[in-house]
Length: 125
Length: 505
Image (cartoon, rainbow over all chains, first blue to last red; front, side, top):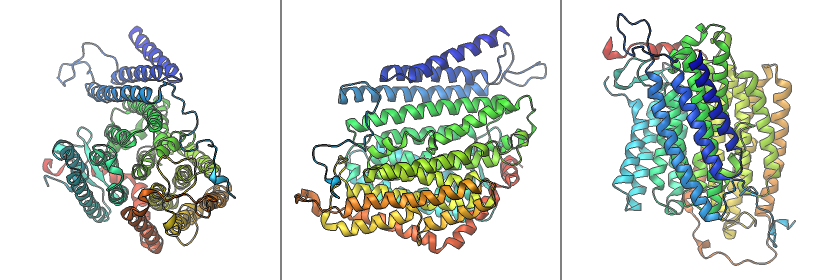
């Protein structure tokens, strides 16, 4: 009971922190929030094979129960992918900071629908 | 049978991409010719696989001959074959259109392009949920690179949004996969389909949460309202050929919705049967309406194209959201034509407007205005759904499929009224763009003489393909109906995947 409670609240706290940080409007908290969210999902995936101790992962005639080894393989893949993605988004936010001079995540206006300049030929009827 | 043709749509782009990065990175000519060659090979392969899939039974490739619930499987049925063929056809157009002007903007365009094809083809072929996640990641990682290709400050900001929303999407996908595995104990589609009906009612809420989270993920990919807002900034700020290729990416989401919610959570799923249908149809109708409002509100061609892509996704998901045989078949037919129309429209944007030009409405090649206006006219007809092009037939079929459903009162007005509004939107932009004679004569650009003939030819070929879809609507629709019948009889799929591989019998 206590282990399940601990892990579940841990995942919940990580996910809540992640969601909160993602909703902020600077790139750095968003990146940290995404990391928190991926930690939460990694622990969650780990628990999807049930929390057991002292159980063998290989079938033996005497075993009373088994630990599921598959989630660990899945978690490994998920960790690798999320690590790579986090690296990418860090580089991206750095480049974005260097090129635009700000770390605000809002686009301001939609990039394709810029407001007017002084001359607007599209206003010609 | 030790080697199957099914691995090649994944293997060819993977090998080509690796070779392009490692061996051919110095010469752009070598990259171009190899990339075009590989794409042609994929088209030939896709045609072959399509013919192969027409025999009616799903073809299965067990990687390493591991039997199905334990090993990885690739499955080819009529739906996957159709999507592969559409991808290959689109890819060859995009690679030709990118050659020359766009692929010089940065390095490794062609390698990223092939990696993107690897992810898309893999997503269409894979037979289990976790590999669907992996192939999604492959196509997303490649798409991040393509989206930022030849970057600028604006593209960087839109790119940050795109990467962030897709990272959140991937996380939610993993939560969903974890929930489903925790309840059912498998991630293989066929095995899931066999075991989901047996889930006890105590575990069903957990599984339902997993299924609906999965629907949310696929909704992000296919830009379904309320998860559509990432699309216009992303597609609007990337290069035109990349946006054209991305037109198939929203269809990967649609494909996944069809696959999971007909096979695993379809009519046979016991307590969780048709779990998506209360959500999908209303969301699709709202998507269509909001996409149309976006089309009406657009002030330039680029934004208009993005919103018309959203509206077309809404239209085809209305057909699919009916979850009836005619609805699915007509949705698939509309998918074929709307993908080509959106892609061609994105390519046309690249020809008509300057890349950085979002304010002015001056076309790049005033001396070819009539040709460009003609192409725009054809594509507008296809996107809006007016006769004689295939969009009309597709919408008609969806309307016909909606006639039987209880939701006719919402489907018919939505499609008919939005079609009218989209005509107004497309006409407004067309008039502003092509009938706008600038009061002050502006000097033609230095490169005005070099009209990108290849891109124009690709757009023309796509219009011809759309016209062919409407001329051969009967045979195409027969094939789509056969694909739908296969989807709605998941027993064949399950038996084909779960039987032991040939070598083990």
